Length: 369
Image 1: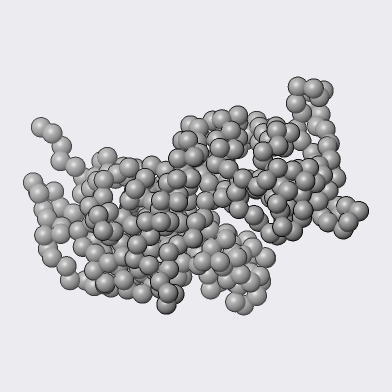
Image 2 (image 1 turned 90 degrees about the vertical axis):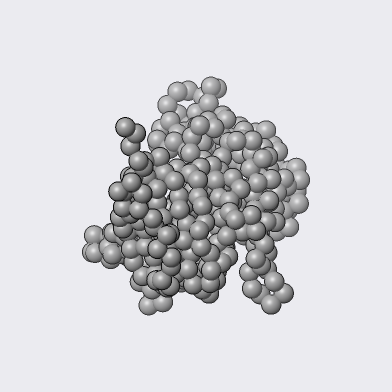
C-alpha cells in the first residue's frame, strides 16, 4: 500500500499538482450501506514542508518523497479515510496483511495505528524501511553494517510489534559477498549473520530482489530489459526499476542463503514462477526445491544458525529446523573438512538441493527410543 505519497490529479490556481479531485473511499457509518462517497482533498492533506508540492498541513513525520505529494498522516481526517480504504481492501477485496511502501516517509506510530484498526498485529505485515548502507571512502561496502541494522531495529521498536521489515542489511552484505568472492562477510564480529536476521530474525523479511531493486530499469520489451534479468514476467512491459539488483549470475546463491537461514523469506515473483511459455522454468524449479526443503526441515524465522566456515571462497552454515538439521554451502570451493558433515548414529546427511556454487544437505533429527 502506497500511503506515504499519492499523485494529485488537478492543478491549483498556482499551478501546483495538489488537488485530489475524486478521492473515493468506502462507506463509513454516516453513509448509506453499499455506497461510497467522494471527497476532495486539497493542500491541507499534504505536509507543509513538502519541498515540491508546498502543502498546507502539518510537518512531515518522516523523509520526503519528491516525485509525489507527501500525505499528512498527522491529520486525523487523512488517517480516518485511509483506514476506511484499508478496511475496504480487507473486507471487500480480501487482503489479509499490508506491505507498507516507503515506510520511512512517515512515523512508525502511524503504521501501528493502521494495522491495529484494520488487519491487526497478528497479520503478516511488512514495511519497506530502506536505510542507507555504510560505505568505505573508495565505494566498497563497509564490513560493519551495524548502523544499518540499528536503524531498522529502532524503526521496528517505534512500530511496537505491528509489522516486520524487509532485511535490506542482509541483501546488502549477501550480494556483495557472492559478487566479489568475499563470503567472509557473511559472519559478523559476533559470529552471527550480518543482516537484521543476526539481531532480530523474527521481524526480518529476507529477499533477493523486488520490483524496486531488480530488473534493468528499462522496459521489458527492449532487448536489455527482457530476459537478461528475468523480470519480464508478463511479457509485455513488466520490469524492475533496477535500483540495486542482485547479481543475476549469483541469484541462486541468494536463494540458497535466505531459504536455509532464519528470518521470513520473500520470493520475487519472476524468480519463482514458471511462465506459460516456459520462461524462467529452470530458475523457478530450483527455488521450488529449496522451498520444499525449508518446509520439510521445519526451518522457522527464529531457527538456530551456526556458521561453521566463512572464508573468501566458501561459506558453510548449519541451521536447526524443527524436524531436521540443514547444512548449506556457498562458494566455488569444493574441498572442506569431512567433519563438517559427520555421520551420527547411522544418520547420514542427504543432499537435497544443489546448483552452481551451492549445495544443501539435510539430516532428520534423531528419534527417541
